[in-house]
Length: 220
Image 1 (cartoon, rainbow, N blue to C red):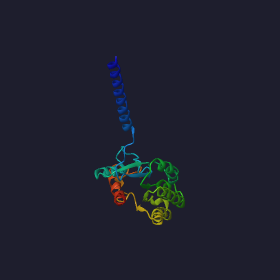
Image 2: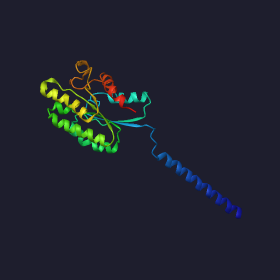
Image 3: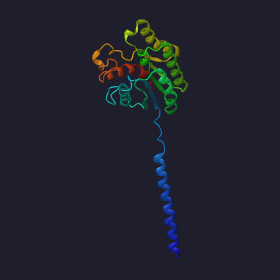
Image 4: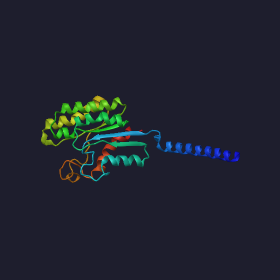
Protein backbone atom coordinates (compact mmCIF):
# COMPACT_ATOMS: atom_id res chain seq x y z
CA UNK A 1 0.00 0.00 0.00
CA UNK A 2 2.79 2.41 0.88
CA UNK A 3 4.55 1.72 -2.42
CA UNK A 4 1.28 2.19 -4.25
CA UNK A 5 0.73 5.58 -2.61
CA UNK A 6 4.32 6.63 -3.34
CA UNK A 7 4.01 5.75 -7.02
CA UNK A 8 0.71 7.61 -7.21
CA UNK A 9 2.32 10.72 -5.69
CA UNK A 10 5.29 10.52 -8.04
CA UNK A 11 3.00 10.13 -11.05
CA UNK A 12 0.98 13.13 -9.88
CA UNK A 13 4.08 15.29 -9.52
CA UNK A 14 5.34 14.23 -12.96
CA UNK A 15 1.96 15.02 -14.54
CA UNK A 16 1.89 18.44 -12.90
CA UNK A 17 5.40 19.23 -14.18
CA UNK A 18 4.41 18.16 -17.70
CA UNK A 19 1.34 20.39 -17.58
CA UNK A 20 3.44 23.35 -16.41
CA UNK A 21 5.97 22.80 -19.22
CA UNK A 22 3.19 22.52 -21.80
CA UNK A 23 1.54 25.70 -20.49
CA UNK A 24 4.85 27.60 -20.62
CA UNK A 25 5.51 26.37 -24.16
CA UNK A 26 2.04 27.45 -25.29
CA UNK A 27 2.46 30.84 -23.63
CA UNK A 28 5.82 31.33 -25.34
CA UNK A 29 4.28 30.56 -28.74
CA UNK A 30 1.58 33.19 -28.16
CA UNK A 31 3.91 35.85 -26.81
CA UNK A 32 4.81 38.71 -29.19
CA UNK A 33 8.05 38.07 -30.99
CA UNK A 34 10.85 40.53 -30.37
CA UNK A 35 11.47 42.88 -33.28
CA UNK A 36 14.88 42.75 -34.96
CA UNK A 37 17.31 45.41 -33.75
CA UNK A 38 17.04 48.58 -35.79
CA UNK A 39 13.54 47.80 -37.09
CA UNK A 40 12.18 50.76 -39.05
CA UNK A 41 8.47 51.27 -39.68
CA UNK A 42 7.58 53.00 -42.93
CA UNK A 43 4.09 54.36 -43.61
CA UNK A 44 2.91 55.32 -47.09
CA UNK A 45 -0.10 57.63 -47.07
CA UNK A 46 -1.29 58.31 -50.58
CA UNK A 47 -4.00 58.11 -53.21
CA UNK A 48 -4.55 55.94 -56.30
CA UNK A 49 -1.01 56.61 -57.51
CA UNK A 50 0.20 54.53 -54.57
CA UNK A 51 -2.81 52.23 -54.12
CA UNK A 52 -2.18 50.10 -57.24
CA UNK A 53 -5.20 51.49 -59.10
CA UNK A 54 -5.77 49.39 -62.22
CA UNK A 55 -2.75 47.20 -61.46
CA UNK A 56 -2.34 43.60 -60.37
CA UNK A 57 -1.79 43.23 -56.63
CA UNK A 58 1.81 43.47 -55.53
CA UNK A 59 3.04 45.27 -58.64
CA UNK A 60 2.95 48.88 -57.43
CA UNK A 61 5.89 51.09 -56.54
CA UNK A 62 5.34 50.62 -52.80
CA UNK A 63 5.76 46.86 -53.12
CA UNK A 64 8.85 47.38 -55.28
CA UNK A 65 10.36 49.56 -52.56
CA UNK A 66 9.57 46.80 -50.08
CA UNK A 67 11.36 44.29 -52.27
CA UNK A 68 14.45 46.48 -52.37
CA UNK A 69 14.48 46.62 -48.60
CA UNK A 70 14.22 42.85 -48.44
CA UNK A 71 17.02 42.42 -50.96
CA UNK A 72 19.36 44.51 -48.83
CA UNK A 73 18.17 42.68 -45.71
CA UNK A 74 16.86 45.88 -44.17
CA UNK A 75 14.88 45.35 -40.96
CA UNK A 76 11.61 47.12 -41.70
CA UNK A 77 7.83 47.03 -41.71
CA UNK A 78 6.08 48.92 -44.48
CA UNK A 79 2.38 49.74 -44.45
CA UNK A 80 0.59 51.09 -47.48
CA UNK A 81 -2.35 53.13 -46.19
CA UNK A 82 -3.14 54.64 -49.60
CA UNK A 83 -6.73 54.88 -50.85
CA UNK A 84 -7.81 55.62 -54.41
CA UNK A 85 -9.52 58.99 -54.68
CA UNK A 86 -8.21 60.26 -51.35
CA UNK A 87 -7.57 63.97 -50.82
CA UNK A 88 -5.46 65.83 -48.30
CA UNK A 89 -8.46 66.39 -46.03
CA UNK A 90 -9.24 62.68 -46.16
CA UNK A 91 -5.64 61.83 -45.34
CA UNK A 92 -5.63 64.30 -42.46
CA UNK A 93 -8.75 62.72 -41.00
CA UNK A 94 -7.31 59.21 -41.27
CA UNK A 95 -3.74 59.85 -40.17
CA UNK A 96 -4.17 60.15 -36.36
CA UNK A 97 -5.79 56.72 -36.13
CA UNK A 98 -3.18 55.15 -38.40
CA UNK A 99 -0.31 56.61 -36.40
CA UNK A 100 -1.86 55.37 -33.17
CA UNK A 101 -2.05 51.85 -34.56
CA UNK A 102 1.19 51.89 -36.54
CA UNK A 103 3.98 53.85 -34.85
CA UNK A 104 5.83 54.94 -37.97
CA UNK A 105 9.46 56.00 -38.01
CA UNK A 106 9.15 57.38 -41.53
CA UNK A 107 6.08 58.68 -43.36
CA UNK A 108 5.98 58.95 -47.15
CA UNK A 109 3.28 61.54 -47.76
CA UNK A 110 1.87 61.28 -51.29
CA UNK A 111 -1.33 63.28 -51.40
CA UNK A 112 -2.70 66.35 -53.15
CA UNK A 113 -3.21 65.20 -56.73
CA UNK A 114 -6.97 64.81 -56.26
CA UNK A 115 -7.18 68.22 -54.60
CA UNK A 116 -5.61 69.70 -57.72
CA UNK A 117 -7.79 67.75 -60.16
CA UNK A 118 -10.85 69.03 -58.29
CA UNK A 119 -9.59 72.59 -58.38
CA UNK A 120 -9.44 72.90 -54.59
CA UNK A 121 -7.73 76.02 -53.18
CA UNK A 122 -3.98 75.47 -52.97
CA UNK A 123 -3.90 77.18 -49.56
CA UNK A 124 -6.28 74.55 -48.15
CA UNK A 125 -4.17 71.74 -49.57
CA UNK A 126 -1.04 73.24 -48.02
CA UNK A 127 -2.74 73.58 -44.63
CA UNK A 128 -3.79 69.92 -44.71
CA UNK A 129 -0.35 68.70 -45.77
CA UNK A 130 1.28 70.90 -43.12
CA UNK A 131 -0.98 69.41 -40.45
CA UNK A 132 -0.08 65.87 -41.55
CA UNK A 133 3.61 66.74 -41.46
CA UNK A 134 3.19 68.13 -37.95
CA UNK A 135 1.26 65.06 -36.77
CA UNK A 136 3.92 62.72 -38.13
CA UNK A 137 6.81 64.66 -36.63
CA UNK A 138 5.06 64.95 -33.27
CA UNK A 139 5.25 61.15 -33.10
CA UNK A 140 8.93 61.29 -33.95
CA UNK A 141 8.63 60.21 -37.58
CA UNK A 142 10.63 61.67 -40.43
CA UNK A 143 8.60 62.77 -43.46
CA UNK A 144 9.28 62.37 -47.16
CA UNK A 145 6.90 64.63 -49.10
CA UNK A 146 6.08 63.57 -52.67
CA UNK A 147 5.46 66.43 -55.09
CA UNK A 148 3.02 66.49 -57.99
CA UNK A 149 2.10 68.36 -61.15
CA UNK A 150 -1.40 68.64 -62.57
CA UNK A 151 -2.42 69.02 -66.26
CA UNK A 152 -1.85 72.48 -67.78
CA UNK A 153 -5.52 72.92 -68.70
CA UNK A 154 -6.12 74.16 -65.15
CA UNK A 155 -4.32 77.38 -66.04
CA UNK A 156 -0.69 78.36 -65.59
CA UNK A 157 -1.23 80.33 -62.40
CA UNK A 158 -3.03 77.49 -60.61
CA UNK A 159 -0.81 74.67 -61.86
CA UNK A 160 2.37 76.54 -60.92
CA UNK A 161 1.05 77.48 -57.50
CA UNK A 162 -0.01 73.88 -56.95
CA UNK A 163 3.40 72.43 -57.79
CA UNK A 164 5.29 75.12 -55.85
CA UNK A 165 3.30 74.31 -52.71
CA UNK A 166 5.28 71.10 -52.16
CA UNK A 167 8.68 72.79 -52.34
CA UNK A 168 7.47 75.60 -50.10
CA UNK A 169 6.21 73.16 -47.48
CA UNK A 170 9.39 71.08 -47.59
CA UNK A 171 11.55 74.16 -47.10
CA UNK A 172 9.32 75.51 -44.36
CA UNK A 173 9.32 72.24 -42.42
CA UNK A 174 12.87 71.20 -43.25
CA UNK A 175 11.83 67.82 -44.65
CA UNK A 176 12.88 65.76 -47.66
CA UNK A 177 11.05 66.25 -50.94
CA UNK A 178 10.57 64.21 -54.10
CA UNK A 179 10.06 67.12 -56.52
CA UNK A 180 7.86 65.17 -58.94
CA UNK A 181 6.63 61.62 -58.46
CA UNK A 182 6.15 60.97 -62.18
CA UNK A 183 9.51 62.29 -63.31
CA UNK A 184 10.67 60.48 -66.43
CA UNK A 185 7.24 59.13 -67.45
CA UNK A 186 4.87 62.12 -67.35
CA UNK A 187 5.21 62.87 -71.08
CA UNK A 188 5.24 59.23 -72.23
CA UNK A 189 1.67 58.27 -73.10
CA UNK A 190 2.58 54.59 -73.22
CA UNK A 191 3.37 54.71 -69.50
CA UNK A 192 -0.24 55.52 -68.61
CA UNK A 193 -3.47 53.57 -68.50
CA UNK A 194 -6.29 54.49 -70.92
CA UNK A 195 -7.54 57.21 -68.52
CA UNK A 196 -4.29 59.11 -69.07
CA UNK A 197 -3.91 59.70 -65.32
CA UNK A 198 -2.75 56.46 -63.74
CA UNK A 199 0.63 54.92 -64.55
CA UNK A 200 0.83 51.40 -65.93
CA UNK A 201 2.47 48.44 -64.27
CA UNK A 202 5.49 49.00 -66.47
CA UNK A 203 5.87 52.54 -65.10
CA UNK A 204 6.01 51.41 -61.46
CA UNK A 205 9.71 50.53 -61.67
CA UNK A 206 10.54 54.08 -62.78
CA UNK A 207 8.41 55.58 -59.99
CA UNK A 208 10.13 53.31 -57.46
CA UNK A 209 13.54 54.43 -58.79
CA UNK A 210 12.54 58.08 -58.43
CA UNK A 211 11.29 57.75 -54.86
CA UNK A 212 14.09 55.42 -53.80
CA UNK A 213 16.67 58.06 -54.65
CA UNK A 214 15.24 60.29 -51.91
CA UNK A 215 14.16 57.55 -49.51
CA UNK A 216 17.41 55.61 -49.31
CA UNK A 217 19.41 58.37 -47.50
CA UNK A 218 16.68 58.40 -44.84
CA UNK A 219 16.98 54.68 -44.04
CA UNK A 220 18.90 53.57 -40.97
